[in-house]
Image 1 (cartoon, rainbow, N blue to C red):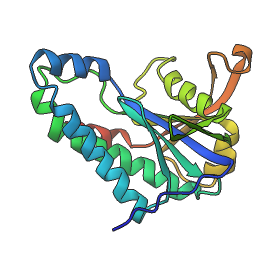
Image 2 (image 1 turned 90 degrees about the vertical axis):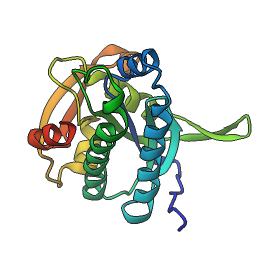
Image 3 (image 1 turned 180 degrees about the horizontal axis):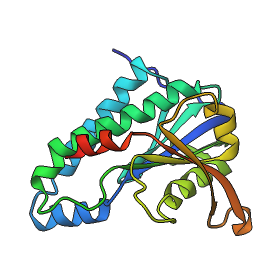
Image 4 (image 1 turned 60 degrees about the vertical axis):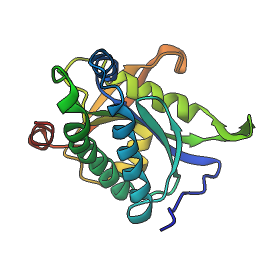
Length: 213
């Protein structure tokens, strides 16, 4: 069955996500000779993403970053559908982590899960080395927001940090499990000034605990 890969115009919603504790996980698997489990794990996540393009919401799986992805969604993507997609992504990750990686680790990492950064804005397409690439502030901000989840203590796992403008435009009418107004200083964004954000929890705490064991 063919996937419904989205056609990205100049405006898009950018979702950047990666895996908590990835450096520790890779180090542990390498030392034990089990690093070959990583391709198995990430291939399973890739299959999940491809399936969700068919039955959830079209998007462009733009970039694999080594421990996560940058996904591009059409600007008019329904916020409720996108929220459900992110929730499903978290649950799928938790199940696959427990199945593919946890049995090969010498110890379970203190922090397990996914973290997300979300921004919306203009993208400029360019071709580099024969590949379609994009540049734009929204990609930079989404990646900075994803990284900034770890800045204020507490577990960042299974939550998203998004700009206030994205929350109001796409998610204000949805029903996240929990949402807080927060601010962050994003490196090289707005001169380091306070950046208005919303932190959205994508799983209820008991769901995250149940799925990750």
